[in-house]
Image (cartoon, rainbow, N blue to C red; front, side, top):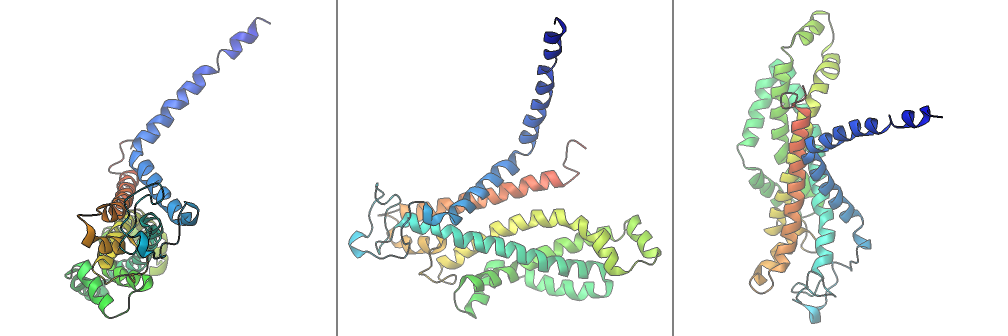
Length: 295
């Protein structure tokens, strides 16, 4: 009977040892936590847009145009009487779809080009000269030139920005492959007669995932900004489509009278780009062993 309390008294120190580790983990990955949380919040807003007290973002009501923010219209209305709050919430769908689609497509295509150029020596010079030529043109100008050849749509915007972003990934992966193919384990695999596809899949490809993931986050943020620029100048998605660039373009003539028409989409765009960049910085710090303090 007297031994029972002493055995129960041993349990509290065990819980106290684990809690500091959890706290240090969240402190160490603070950028990933904050950035990832904000990105998930924006994705949730885009998916649940019809449930967030929104109305039809394309509904025109001339009698209610240029209303100030109020209980009925949280962000006010634009020059055609459309609810700015609904247009901003639905505009998150366009920016996120363009950002994630460009990041995935550019990463996959750039990965293939970088692996081919970095491991196949005779093709390196030819491929990289083409990449250098594409990188000599600013991405926004290349996207504008490509959009001038097609009609405005979300799919064409994704294709135009993807073509402009592929050289970044290809050059990065090519540099990683050039450093990896001189490693002893790769030379050992070559000396044992391993085929090139097997070497690439087993030894080269896994080591390119981490830098490619970090680069993909920056491409996602850049694609959102480029899409907003294209829409702002009228070379992006159709004006009837609610996107943050279109909203700012339509509100620039009323900037001095109704600045909230530009302020709210610009705020959402800035928060989303900041969240993606924070996520990329956190992934870089956690995936790069040279920056990991615990090693």
